[in-house]
Length: 294
Image (cartoon, rainbow, N blue to C red):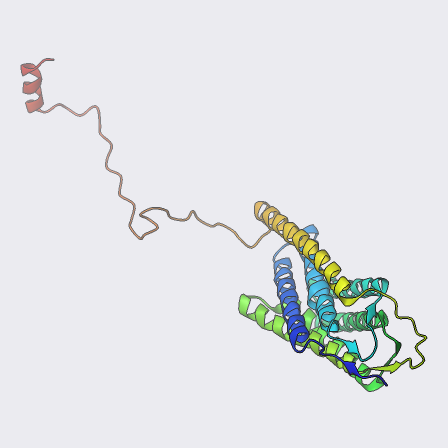
């Protein structure tokens, strides 16, 4: 058996993976909270789609890939299959999307959340092990069944908790706390699954290691992520503007806001009675008019 390292770069990869997962979960939960404030239909579909990309793309898959960059095998190169890596991304987005739309488009019951959590957890497990199938080393990758079962349980529990948070939490503090819990579940599932990994090295040296280098992969993913985040931000801003003009958003104006002295707490001056033009001229004015007719 070859020696396997999961923290080749020290704590850099786990810390970055955890941070990426928190950010993805945070954005996703804000979007699901926004989705509950608009009517079912195109507005809600937009917000749930953005939440799917944030949670499934960044909060789970990108965190998984960031953690994987710390994976190394002694005396063997590590290469990645672009095709299977892309399939793992599709599985992550599909699993999260199915779960969010099952519980987020209509008011769900507890049974529906549990069923959706099982489906999403299975999809996330498939994402992880599809990604592992795309890892090529000079030998054969093996797995310990007990730890695989433990990672499956964590995946289902984490997915169910994430879906429950997506339909219940409101407010900045609660969303931030839920994001930390979600990221803990995602990273816990990843490293439990990675603890099950072993490598039987090819001692003969006939195994060809094909695929792209980790650095090439992460540069490509970084570019794609930057483009995706820009598109997400643009769509979100357009959706917010459209909802505010259509009256679907949460921001409503009930009364005009005070300005000037009124905003500082001073009451507006009471308007004086208008000057009447039909008032009689006083005797003094009559004498002055007769004395100076011009």
